Amino acid sequence: MTPALSIQHLELSFGDLDVLKGVSFNVTPGEVLCVIGPSGSGKSTLLRCIAFLETGFRGTIQVEGEALGQFEKNGKQVPVRGAALRKVQGKIGMVFQNFNLWPHMSALENVMAPLTIVKGMSKSEAKKLAMENLHKVGVAEKADTYPPRLSGGQQQRVGIARALAMQPRVMLFDEATSSLDPELVNEVLGVMRKLAEEGMTMIVVTHEMDFAKKVADRVIFMDGGVIAEQGPPKQVLETPREARTRAFLSLID
Ligand code: ADP
Ligand code: MG
Image 1 (cartoon, protein in one colour):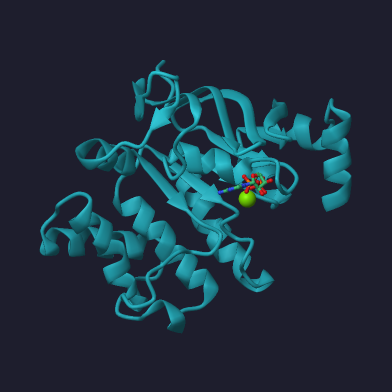
Image 2: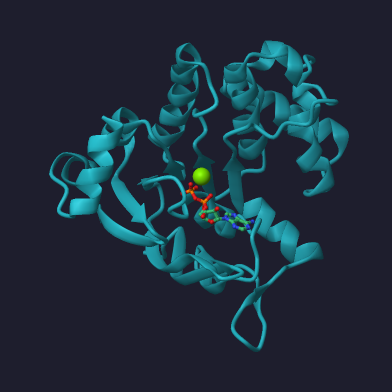
């Protein structure tokens, strides 16, 4: 079976700082992968490369067998533009810790914008699809509300609807609940769990170990820009093989 996502030898440095030092893994269609690890280990950078929000990395990223981006002579990925960029943006959906909604647009307009701008849909088509997705995450009644008037949980659900409306092949979540007040975390995790149950292919960077235990098919522990350990959630989270995984887990429990 062709992997939904295949990452081979991914390396990225910022100046002298090597942030990703050769990360390789495949994600099968419908798989839910949780990525855990200490702050600064490269988790966000990994997701940002997959979404092509970072460029200039080495290695390959393929979605359903197709490489994203182009190579320069020195082997680095170069920014894709125009139609090629839109194709990447259409395949990967990303949800951010701080929601990244446009404050001057209503919830509905936030979801519609990429559909009209990136996908070139008509306004009426985009509105229909946007409303369907706002409904799916349970915030349809807030369609005309502006983000500053929404709770954090509602804002994040709009962020998820915006990514989903693009009908991506893979969804990336970067600490999607870390900015939320504790009582709002579950409404967002619930939406993510529903997506997982519906068969969405997902990579979830999270500190919610309970979510990882219950929902993930596989857990990756990153440390210092490499995958230090990976396996089924029960094994990695309950009987980790690596000392550094144990050290990390003892700090967050
Ligand atoms: P994590 O998400 O695991 O906390 P990040 O991927 O955000 O880690 O960051 C990994 C390392 O890369 C950190 O040392 C961070 O300071 C550094 N870093 C991230 N983005 C940049 C950037 N744009 N420029 C320079 N350094 C960066
Ligand atoms: Mg991060």
